[in-house]
Image 1: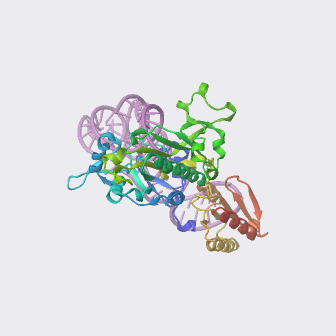
Image 2 (image 1 turned 45 degrees about the vertical axis):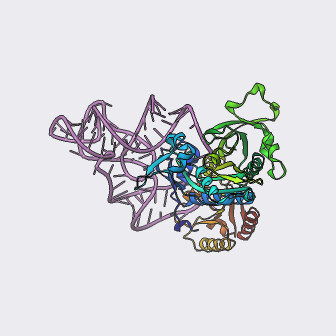
Image 3 (image 1 turned 90 degrees about the vertical axis):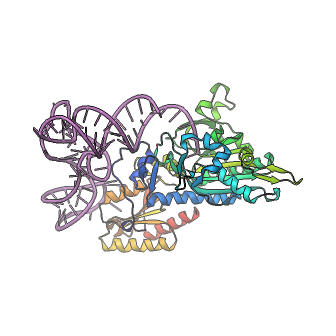
Length: 433
RNA sequence: CGGGGAGUAGCGCAGCCUGGUAGCGCACCUGGUUUGGGACCAGGGGGUCGAAGGUUCGAAUCCUUUCUCCCCGACCA
């Protein structure tokens, strides 16, 4: 993509409305624009990142055996009356009427809808287990939205729902999803810490929340330092769940079960939550299946959420410096910024055009900064945007057939020939695909 | 919802106390000079001062009402 043909409205000043660093950077990098409190438009750069995160979440869901569907944002109140949550959910639930006077709502979650879908089609234990997910916008009319997309009223969430014949099977589904969550967050470049959690208004009796480490995180975590280096491929979920981890108000330092030397304290951001809640909804909404004795029994359900739009903010909270965002390569909107310091110079332009073609042919996302503007603005804009690699082409070095390759994360740059730089980048980037 | 703060040009702000018809920096447009870290010079465009009502000869400024946004707290992906 050529910068001059694209739309990345960067800002020099911090907007007065934004308090936390991810919110400030998202606005300054031209990723989002606030529409009203807790509601945002996603501009091209933000949308690219959102889609990348969504895709990683989707892949891991698919790998886990979950099946994608898409349910509507607008729901009829009827089902919520049946489940009892039309009363219970309170003012967070955005309610309105359609032209026929029917009570409608903007879904904050989808247990009722999915249960209805399930009961419409599934009648036999032979069709279990079943695990359906969707990635859809939700709305919760928060008392106080804040922190940009980290705590929006409208937000993109991946939620899925597992259906099993009994509690034992449901726990297998639960643990399967537990592992999928750890894998997902690791794949996003984050460090997940899982904590046993309260079940909250969704209800149920087994629940974990997933926090990712970020120095600017909202909650303080106390946990076994082993959790920072786990590999979900070779560890059982039960074993992983047995490691100590607690948020500050639940941590009792006198009765902590692990040694102080193994205890780590860090800040975290909650990005996922999973629940097993048994037959709470299936009973109320008649989601029954017949077992092998022909008896009708309510299915055991679990629900699992990942805040996809929140993750955009969480990743920035985890990876930034005073110059801007530092994207993990997996979610970077572009892998490379190709920066032409002097677009009016014939040789610079020729070299950049050539390099651009090479990366386009390699199918590598590249942002070609061909704008005619000052050098400082280009370099600082690209730092702000946070592409992992900056390939800087200027008149001075080009005389010696050299370009500068800078790694955003370390700020280390080297002078290489264009060929060397290309080879290095293609190798690096393809190895992380 | 309780407590605090803010709405003046695209962004960041000053002006308000003490009323006299709006200004600064950045951004933007034109021309020129520059060119390895947010350039320089000259010229230029852009605001019914959140909205409504009131006081006054006169309101960004004083009074009333209202809307919006932000921060702290209680709650959440």
